Image 1: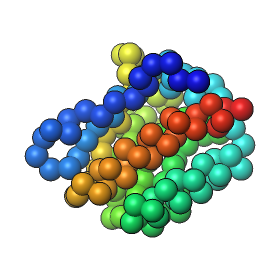
Image 2: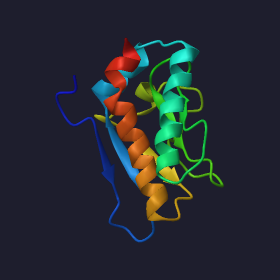
Image 3: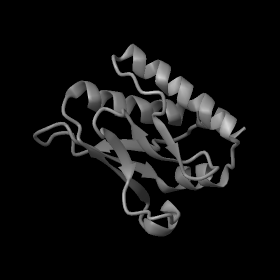
Image 4: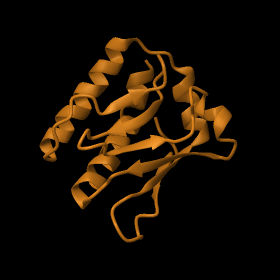
Length: 135
């Protein structure tokens, strides 16, 4: 069970709708250590798709995982390249690239509040289901 804040949005006060997310490094480490089969990744994508559909977005593959782990490197809406992703990995582990207390996600092509809210909802859904995902 989550006992502390593991993610928070940043830069949502700026003009436009792009945003960033700080993800707790300890949480990221847990998710990277949790190897999961493709079947669990597919189930997670189905949950994300169903939630997005309720919010007016239609994308079947909203979660991109880091290899066969439970760690999500990109949350996507698929609408002309709308996503929230960990930048600068180039195949490396996020733990190796980001040395600080947080892993940083940044958005791309977010044009409206609905897209911003949908991306944050995808992050929240992933974090909420993280314990089940790791089982």
